[in-house]
Figure (cartoon, rainbow, N blue to C red):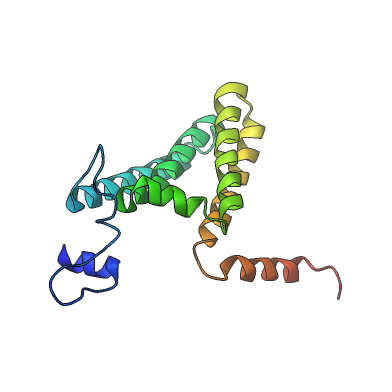
Length: 163
C-alpha cells in the first residue's frame, strides 16, 4: 500500500509519510480507509465495465443496451470518486477546462435514459447513445494535455473539402 501511496503522491519525503489524494477528504460522514477506497473504486470500475460489456450482448435491443451502457459509464466514471473523494471529483469535472464537456456528457446521459425509459423509441435511444459515446470521448480527452486540440485539428484536416 505504501508503494501505491507513493505512486499516487509522486513520492515520499523520506520520513515514511506521504501526502496523497487518497488521504485528502478522508474525514466526513462516510470515511473509508485507503484500502477500502481502493477496493470500492476497483469494484465500481469492474461493475461499470461489466455492465458495458453486457450491453454489447443486448445490442440489438436498444433500450436494454442504453440502460446497461449508461449505468456502466456512470459507475466507471464514478469509480474515481472513491479514490479522490466526491468533492474533488466534482471540482475536476466542473473545472473551466472541461465544464462544457461534462455538461454535454451529463445531458447526453439524461437524454439517453429519457429516450430509453420514457419515450421507448429505439431510434432516438441509439442516437442518444451515439451522442453519449462522443461526449464521453471528448470528456476523456479533456484530461490529456492538448488531446482535444490535436483531435480537432485532425478532424479539420480530414473533413477539409479544399484540395
